[in-house]
Length: 299
Ligand code: SF4
Image 1 (cartoon, helix red, strand yellow):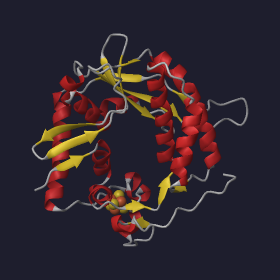
Image 2 (cartoon, protein in one colour):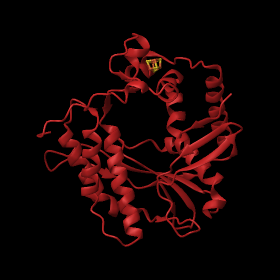
Image 3 (cartoon, protein in one colour):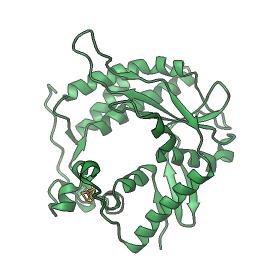
């Protein structure tokens, strides 16, 4: 029985399908191609959190340059899958608009950065929490902030294609994980627990071709009360179940019903269902992996 260090993203992947969790997190498999949504989200995050830190320390910060540099670096080092309805150029334009709008959206939220006991902002701070014997949660909440009531709020910055349902804010295990990480580390950080959880969503709508249409933009920050003890216990039990499956070495497939199957969107679908390993990169191959296909200069 070995220790399991689990990330919030691993818990979410296991929810989707335990076998896909096994492929990604236990066996270390990757696909050669990556959805553009991942590098896009990374680049917007980078620009947004760099802005927050620069603003706190009264430094200048060009959010568009940060976005473009990060996005370019990310897509240059991977094979990228882009939906047929958009081009990479579209994603650059959408991202630039989103990061340009971020400072105003943050101002309007009325939130201010929460500082640790050394006076440093708690932004993208990696931390661990022991959930049970041999089970450690390891994660990095995006931003810890104070609202106008002085409540400590954990904010997750997201770049969805559409606004998420308010119910999801109250159900999201990712936010529960962040709350538990902060609570476990509260005395080291010098904070008085966590009172609220929230999403700040930059919706990556297409840029309208005419003067009509909404285009990309930030939704008002949604906040919900922190989870109660039964929610915390649910999360611990869920993580313990992953550990139990790991100890037995068996992660079941979870194809579900036709209308809500995760299989059609699963990165490992050909490997899992058709036993076809083409397009899968095994850990031992990564060192000798060929360079990704370069994007044409005119993307
Ligand atoms: S194809 Fe379906 S059953 Fe197989 S790993 Fe993916 S989601 Fe799970």
